[in-house]
Image (cartoon, rainbow, N blue to C red; front, top):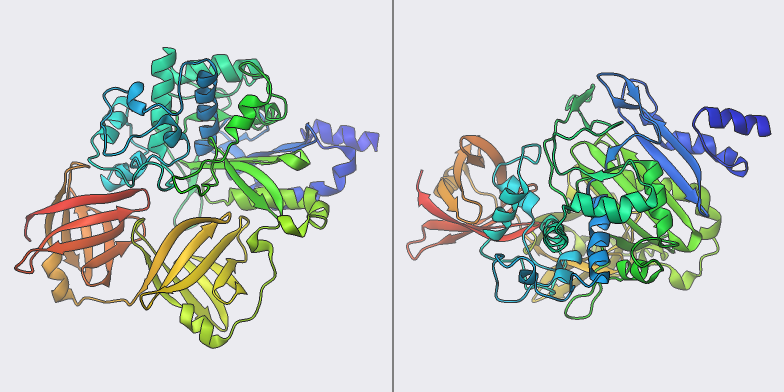
Length: 558
């Protein structure tokens, strides 16, 4: 046995002897990564304070054939938000920042709205500030292009309205974390990169972790991000010039993230002790007292009845997931340089290998609603729930269909979730790792579907009947429309029986009619058209998942 363990160490696998039987199972989870001509990723498995398994699969740089190891540096996307949060909390501990102060205390040139926005609102994604990455898309701008911090700050300031009153709702906002970085920098007099280096990365020995705030900087052992080609044969190199920090910007390794993970059990930063860690994990709440499921750059959830703390990341061909089961002293770290992978599923699959015996002994009183037993409902009741549903606030369209006696929830044609009933008008998504439920009720004669994730109410969707326009009827919507908040003119034209949206001659979207004067595109959102007293189309309002209420005034007919 000692000889076998030594052999594995030579192969850069570090796994305890008692867990050797799991090696093949772990490798099978990452089988499609384990090639010398495809991108892949690195993983780390942490058990009771030790890295019991770490390995790289695939290639970090396809052009040079550089293999991935556990020391390969990856962009970790929004997984890095927890570092921004920690910087903010360190500054609060130092007495430099008040979380309940209005953000204008630190950003005096930021516009004021009808209700105050606090620093805490930014951290909990409850500020209502429109998401800058979504605005970029609506402008026809790609995040692969270069956008400076100053340009992004001015873009956020330009917005004439919020998505909602601060504190009333939860809506994920990269803008909030970008502004947190701006606050840290202004109050500390240092860049976020410098502050994190001095106060987090160097003290923990995370020497291969950094914020990239200048895309010209060199990063040793960096992986490149890749996207699978549309024909499925080979990969495209995603060349990024992205350099914004706060909402993301962190490069790291499996080995460094292990050190960060362990600091949650024995904090060595700031004044040390667990007070700072406990604060970071405090779950946010709304004005009505309901919880958001989010803490400071972290997601609080359950899996198979066990408490989990995590955050994923996805950007420019990179994927990341850091999943912790604190009560079991167990974590998985998964980093990838290919966009065609489900990081959460892989993380939970690893957890299944190590924690399956614990699942069986979990107190049933702690189980989430999604873990409860299913019941049978009649075909008539199934049919009563089917149809198309519109989330008016967030611009999402979903549908529930009955397929051969089984209900399915469709986000889009390529994304379906099988449903099972747990009560007559409550359904759970069977194949979702995180508890996800749909609850139905009738309001004024119409069916309303409420969406719950981690037992938290996320959205209400109203059922509607599809209303399809003929090509000649679509022509009344043609013309040019100007959106002042994004400083762009959309040109709407009918082509091949579809209403299409163009910016500077380049197609942005192809929208389909939902009902009278309402159109939708899964990437763009929902367009609500207004008419004047002569019944002429004069404007439309756009609601998308992270940007609501954008007004486009008609400035020219076709």
